[in-house]
Each structure stands twice: as C-alpha cells, then as structure tokens.
Length: 231
Image (cartoon, rainbow, N blue to C red):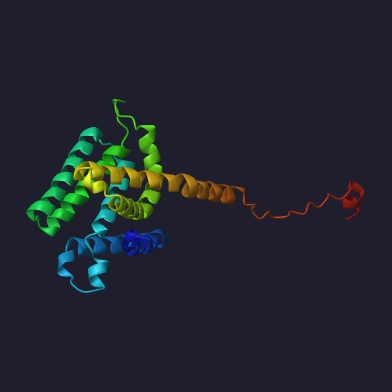
C-alpha cells in the first residue's frame, strides 16, 4: 500500500546498529566501521542477506552521521557554496545515470556526496546573514515525514484523476508533471496539519505532563530536650 515501505528495513537495521553504539561505544564504532567498508564494496555481495546488510543505500546513512559529527565539531566557511555545489553534483550525477548509463557505484558515491553537502551547508548558519531560511521552507522541513509516507499515494491518486479527466490531452508533459508534484505536496501538508502535528503535540504533552513517582520521606520530629537528657 505504501510505496516507500521498502526503505523501512534499512532504517530498522540502522536503529539496531545505533542502539549497539549507544550501549557499547567501542563495539558500536567497530561495527559501524565494518558496515561502512562493506557498503563501499556492496557490488561484491550478490545474494541475500549480504546484499541487504551491505547495500549501497547504507552509505547515505553513514554520510548523514558524518555530516552531524562535522556540524558539531567544525565550522563550514562557505555554506551557501557548499549547497550549490552539492545540488549541482546531485543533479548532474542523476541525469548522467539515467540518460548516459553512469556506473552504479559512481552514481551512489556522487549522489551521497551531493546530498551530504546540501544537508551540511543548509545546517550551518550563514555568517553573512544573507541566507535566512524562509518560514514556508521550515514548515516543509517539519512535514518531511508526512511527505515521505504519503507522497506516492497522493501522486498515484492525482495521476489517476488526471488520466480519467484526459488532462494529459490538454496540458503539456512538463507542466503536468509540476502540477502532480505540487498537488502531491499539498496533500501531504494537509496530512501533516491534520494528523501528524496534532499527534506530535499530544505526545509531547503526554510525556511532559506524565506524573513521576515521588519518594515519600517520613519526617521524624526531634525528641524534647528532657527526653534527650534522660537518655
């Protein structure tokens, strides 16, 4: 039903490995290092489960962790340039892969680096204060999980409606594609506003207002001076 459900096993594997890292730091670092090396050489693993455990998709997760570490310990001097270069790399590599048969490993590396540069550049505050995040873009960022879960269903429904109404006979392909994307994002934002955000707000209130166990302390009054002297 949900087209993006195929990504969930990769996320669950990451959560499991990250849990190991939290419980035992050295063991977790060793496992992540071994996992990363295996993902780099993912084309060497043909059958399940190795093809899943060391899939090239995991390199995106590792890249996201490295961006997080870099953001916490270093400062990016030219964040805007980093975003532009990363977006250009992502676009060029993607087009080359689709139309010119770029090798799969080049596509994975270029795609991963491009995305990492965009994320790192956007996360770093701009020292010149010329790059400020618009409120609508921040709202889209908050709605990314709804977009992730609902966009394929929304695109499919919009495509079926447009096909039944013969919209493709009157609207050119590229404008129609843009209308599909805009419509799908609009549907996901409605889902975010009606379902995800109220649920998150309820969860925050529930866990914030949940009463904690209080330890009862019995206060024993001090004995009178006459009793202390007699003792």
